[in-house]
Length: 135
Image (cartoon, rainbow, N blue to C red; front, side):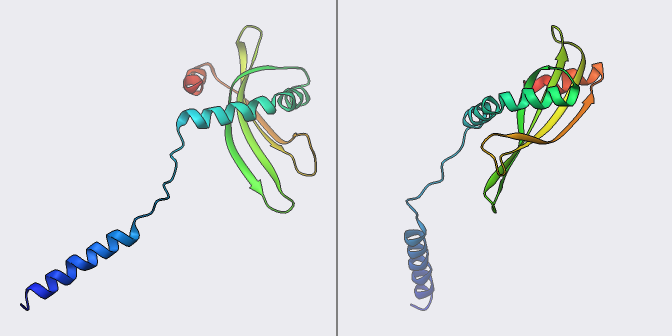
């Protein structure tokens, strides 16, 4: 009897823990497709702001591709967002020079998005294929 009581206590404890720890709430798994869709929408909304930032930075309009979202920050007071994007600019029909450009946009105190930081560097020919693999 002394050996059975601890065993019964253990079984009852496991049953109660299992019963009361079960939750009907299940987390939704976000798919890569949903993340890509979100990023595409953001890049589309930033299209005019991106063109303006590139023209101001380079002194002329620039074509680009391989846009992707690097970071999204939600600021609290006042409530606004900073969105950092990365893209590759090119000349003509996808010709050199290629520049890797990182732009941070903000909607702080504004309705429209504006570039608050922009960095660029010219890519070497051997860097192009490594960077554009995910495009």
